[in-house]
Amino acid sequence: MQNAEQQQMNQGNAEGAKKVKISFEEFRKLSFMIISIMKDFERSGEENVRQGDIVDRMVQKIELEGTER
Image 1 (cartoon, rainbow, N blue to C red):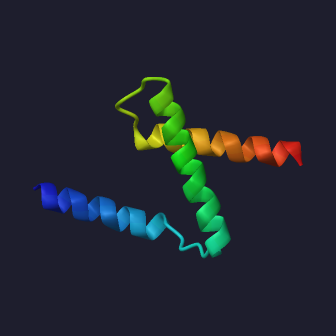
Image 2 (tube, rainbow, N blue to C red; image 1 turned 120 degrees about the vertical axis):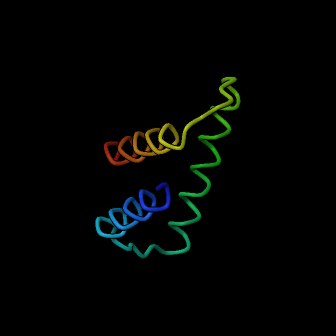
């Protein structure tokens, strides 16, 4: 039963997902941003951080960078 649900979720993700090509520099920038955000959570004492929390913080930082330009 669980395999059928996982296959259905994967199929839904594959249909809605688009492949995006980024340069190595963009990849590197995003990687460092993730590390920085994880360190921020660690410094604040949060241990069980959800992936969604990291993504939300990344989006906030990217939006902030966009408004500063």
